[in-house]
Length: 166
Image (cartoon, rainbow, N blue to C red; front, side, top):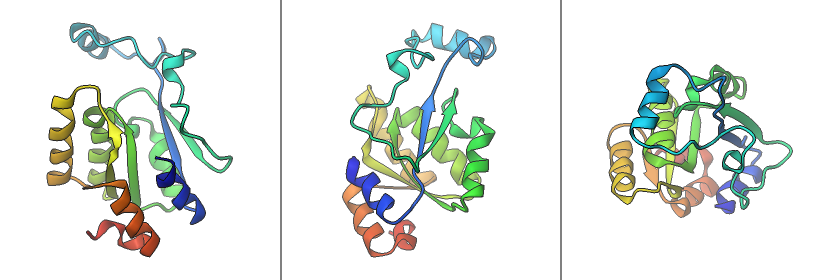
């Protein structure tokens, strides 16, 4: 995972970390809470708990950006798209946890907003294998490109603009 971050850093490409944060203030209305309880979702990503911390092997840099979110898609926080626009970003390379919820939701929304998006298959994960592969197939078939980290790095090293042309 670190090389997928290190190479873009060498190229001075912006790195944006998204962080899911739940609290009483952003739990939302009944629908969100009732759905999570009905499906017995854990009370995860609670502000101030270890479940809200970044995985310890991911090391941020002083030049990285951080955006908090409280729903699956990062676009539910308007600051995310504002940040992308201010940085003149038109292509995103995505990694992350919960491929079929957070990664897929953000990738779909990015596609709907006309961003080029690549999802790195071996740098995304989900706890339920029956959801992981179908999600990657669906993402690749309908929304954005899916490739391995090695494929992405090869393209990035060659020409960062060709990353979307596979």
